[in-house]
Length: 287
Image (cartoon, rainbow, N blue to C red; front, side, top):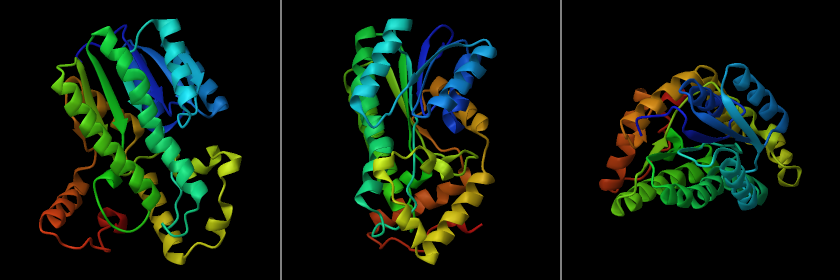
């Protein structure tokens, strides 16, 4: 996809962080932008901000974990703009517990947003793109955590590994039918966003406050290390620039942090050599 002006982009998780930066960049490229987020107040502010900058915007409150919400998002997009050319399945959250401390509610919330959100996006929007027959692109937000092994953020990692595999399969299946739809998977490390405060948007029925009150000290340490990594990370705007470069060049893997690539390579080598995963493999997390 080389041309963006007057095309239609849909961005989930658009009210903050990477999603906001992607939506802002879409507006700068002259696209019509559909903003989707579960946080109604933040969504309203984002929509107004982009309109003030001159962008053509439609804001739709959307819980990506619910198929009916994503289907409604697609219908609103078609009703207002008539098409969709660029889809960012970007919404993401994290429950920062060990795997054995994670409750069913933790799993339901994180899988619902991070993995089912992407599944719903693909199932809903890709058929529309195929019917259009135009040049289109899908960008699924995973994480460097979807490419490495090691301790910590296990529930999150499960979903992000899933997003990588889903994206790889989608790209291959679309190529097999000569579709005019390209796919990328975004795998950033530290980015200065509000991901560490994702609990603000957790549904009441899926709360797990007890886990944080009784968490193992190692779990608390990992959380604080991750917070430092996020706060010292790239700006979302820098990530958006890398994403649009990848779209223009039809690049599938978008690894925004070169210093993490050795850990990706180590995991691949561990698999091929049938070595056990390394509990010390946290790389830049130790920095």
